[in-house]
Structure formats: structure tokens, C-alpha cells
Length: 249
Image (spheres, rainbow, N blue to C red):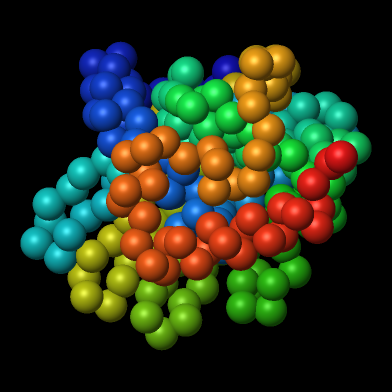
């Protein structure tokens, strides 16, 4: 394990706060940030790289007030399987992309899953290519040292926000930091809680046998259903329609 570590006190605080925030929030978080996750926070797998990285995201208002809004775990296995987990252990949601093309989304609170077969969900970044994704707006990276790791830094702007992202060159292009600054002065910063190059915990990729299968909308808790507005309902209808065409039968 490399030297990306925060204090034990802060780590406990992160898990405590994140547990409260994410128990009812994790499924909506998957729906609302799906596009950003795929474009901006891609977990990258290579046949020879295994890692697990835990990141905490803090949102900062224009007045400087900050609150923890997300706790994320990314992990890759040697076979190329990738998992994104939102929330602390035993809570939240997971999206697992297995090497055989099966993709499983879970809600570990409602003990439900949604299984499909689809093309690659998480795009690959390779250390040999300086962790570049090939995006036209990404540009050439600079190399910085974060903790004890060399990281490729990418910066891009679309006029409404500026995004800086760092990927660890020696750890399979694991995401190790992300900073988004919005035009109203607010920002979002994601930092590493821990990063290990050991084989991931098998439980991250394990689907318990008692998890019920269903479309994405069926994974939500009752609280999440009540909090879902018209825009949210439309997104879940789109996800459910997609599920019917891609589900594993």
C-alpha cells in the first residue's frame, strides 16, 4: 500500500458522514452522475494491474462551506474486471464490469441487482499511453507527484466548469484526485483516502445469492422512490427500457 493516507480520525469521520448521506442517496447518485462517471472518473483496468482506491468527494459552496457528498471505491482485478462502489462497506451501490462482458448493478441496502451484457462501460486508460483516453478535449498531460505516486494530470474546460484529473501512472491509471470548479465559484474535490496495489477484496465483486434480479428502478429504496422527481423518473424509465434489451436471460 502506498503512502496516500489520511488520519484515522478523519477516516472514521468520513465513513460516519458518508454512511448517513449515502444510505438513501447512493442509487440516485448512480442515476444522476452516470454520464460523468463514464467520462470523468473512469476506473481503468489492465491485465497486469490490480488496485483498490477509496476516494472521498467534498462539495464546496461559493461561500466556502464544504460537505462530504460521496465516498467511492474503485477496484480492478488482474483479469480486467472493474468495480465502482458508492458508499461505505455494506451500504450503497455497486457497478461491476466483469471481464466476460457481464455488467451488474447492485443496491447493497435493498439486496437487489440488475444484470446485463453490454460493451465496455468503463473505458481503459493505460500507463504506457500516459493514462490518456484519447478525448479530443483532454490535451496532453503533465506529470506531478502526489504522495509517493507519479500522476498524470489532465485539465479541460467547457466554459461552465474547469476539471483537473490526476491518474496514478504506477498503479494502472487509478484515479487519485479530481477537482471541478464551476463558474459560480462552487467546486467539488475528490481526494484519496487509501490506495493499495494488492488484489482487491473479493467481496467487492461478489453477488450474494439472495439478491433479487430486476430492472434498475427496482433497486431503489422506498425513500429513494419518494425522492425521485419527474426528471429522475424519466431517467429510470430509460434505464429500464435499456435493461429489457440487454438483460442476461
